[in-house]
Length: 475
Image (spheres, rainbow, N blue to C red):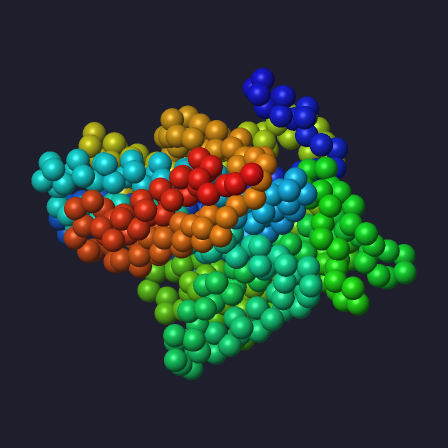
């Protein structure tokens, strides 16, 4: 509590605290959303299994327009990445130094999860656990990693994409939306391979809006309508790169009127695309549903993102007034110190609780949408919160310490080898997580993850760790 109080007292007056609140809320909603729709059953061998209950809760499909909060995370991620990149550059840092900085906060907590799960899988295998069962448990625990594949890709692309944003502004996310539409057409009419790019284009479109939010707040237009000289934002940016001479860009409007327009436009578009169009109403994965709005992101999901942006803008004023109070702001700081740890470990908490209750013979398995199933939701969520709190207490300090690491504070600039190594390190980590996510859960894997994924991940994380130690820096 004392550290939280100190951090709260040191918060710059101009910090966009609302971004931190949105990040904390988004991850909290993901965690409780996953837990809430989990249904526990047993397979033919009597082993406990878990799956989503959404297939039996069709009435809840429209609620997923709020529950699908990954667009919110990419939005605030874009804001935070633009802020930290411009801040580091104002101190004389460069893009490779920024990538190395970000790897500390993103890769170290992920490495902790993977190493612990791999060690647990190895112990299970040595104790003669079925390798297919080992993979199923590992696969379920690492479901959160699919999100990191797209987010790490967005981080690697932040320096060039932010430069593109500074030149073309909102034209960039609009172009990405067009690409998502072409991918949707391929998914609906073939070939389906045309839609694979949506895994990147969809999330990049929302990430670019985060850039636009950052710049709209930190670099206001001049009274003449031309871009004014950039002003520093105490929490994030420092001086931003001015627009290129002769280039005029439309800025993201942040007013309440703009919020109403985004909300109405997004809601209208999603109704057309789902109720009248071909896309499912649910924005989360529904078992046995042919189309999935989030894998890859569809135009319907981007319409939901636009509506969510409208809600965010409408609630911005009251939220900022709330966050000026010390108590709420300390809570937001506390959650953000371990927010990735909470996200990464929340399904492991579910596995541990299910295993514990099953071992002592007290695991309830009521049918979905029955009175017993609903009554079990409250103790289920409370018990999971306790288990996750223990895991966060153990592993959260890794993330909290990583957040204090700042490679960019060193003087000097990097070499070409350092730049290439940073990109290769990220690429190896992303490839490893992608291989793990794409490998079916029924594949026999004694170590839980495919061996190529583990080798690639350790190599990429090792390179980034070496770079964080200062290798490749001159000056």
